[in-house]
Length: 229
Image (cartoon, rainbow, N blue to C red; front, side):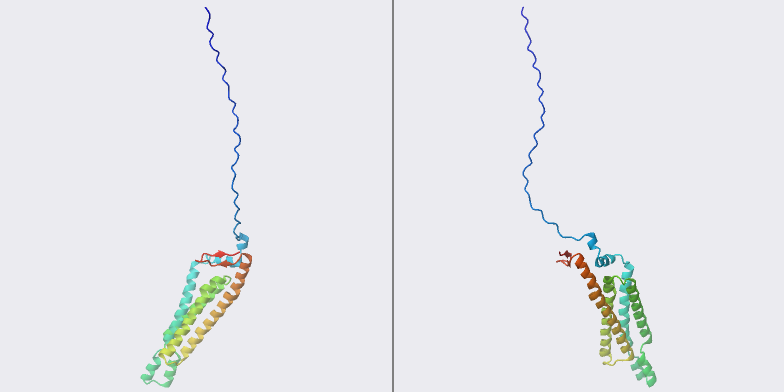
C-alpha cells in the first residue's frame, strides 16, 4: 500500500521592506518678498524729544492738578479786579463827603475785594513759577500746562478790565484800573515771550534733531501718527 506524500509547505517569503523613495517636493512658487518697512531702532528712538513725551506720564497727576489750579486762580484774580472799579466814589459824592475822602475812595474803591484779587493773583503767579522751575527741562509740559494757559487767562483779564472801564465807567481809568491793566499786561507779556521762546525755539531745535535721527512724524488721517522715511 503506497503512502500518500503530503504536500510540502512552501516557505513563506518575507518581503523586504524597502524605504519609500523620497517624495520629490512640489515646485513652489517663488513670490518676491516685500522689503521691510523702515522703523526706528531703540537707540534711535532715545532722543530728547521722545524722552520728554514719555516723561509726561511720569509727572505726578497732582502737579497737573496744581497747574490747572494756579492758572485758574490767576484768572480769578484778574476777573475780580474789575469788581473794584465800583461805586464807592459815587456814593461818597452823593453823601456830600469831602474831596480828600473822594480821592481816597478813588484810589481804592473796594478794599476787601481788591485785597482778595491781589491774593489770588499772587498765589497763581507764585505757583506757576514754582511749577516752571520744578519741570523746567520738559518743554512740552511747561508750554502746554503753564505758559499757554497763563497767556490766555491774562488776555481774558485784559479784555475784562477794558470792558469794565468802557462799559461801566465811560472810559475813565482810575488808579485801580490802571494797576490792573499793568499787572495783566505784564503777565501776558511774560507768558507770551516764554511761550514763543520754548515753543518756537527750544522745542523746534529738539524736534529738528529728533526728525534728523528718526525721521519726520506725520499726524496721519485720524491722528494715529505716521513715520515717514
